Image (cartoon, rainbow, N blue to C red; front, top):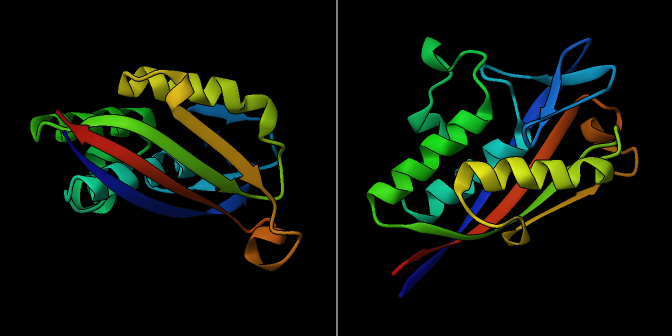
Length: 159
C-alpha cells in the first residue's frame, strides 16, 4: 500500500449580512465568508490537502474563480469532484484533520454535522474526520472578524 500526506490552507474575507457556510453547515452570524463559490473555508482547505497529497495541483486549478460553473456552488460539490479526481488516480481518503481559526461564532456545537457532511461527500466514516476550532485571541484580521482561516491535513492511500 502506498500512502501520501497533504496539507491545505484557505482564507476568506468576512462581510456583514453574508451567508456563513462552514463544513457544509450554515452558521447563524452577522457576518459570513465571501468568495466565488459558497466560500466554505473548511472544505476548500480539505480539497487543497487532498489534491496536494495526490499531486493534482490545487483547488484554484480545478475550480477556477473565473469560471461561472462554480459561481455560488456548494463546496460539498467541489469536495465530491475532488474525491472523483483522486479516485481516477487510484487514491482513497484515509483521514482528515482540520483546524478553523475565527473569533465567532462558536464552532463546537456544529462539528458533528460538519463531520457528517464531509463523511457523506467523501465516503468515509465520521471517525476519520477531525475538526477543531480556535480563536486568534482578538489579534490581527481574524481577531477583528475581518476574515476566517482553515488548515487541513489528510492521508490518502493507494491499495
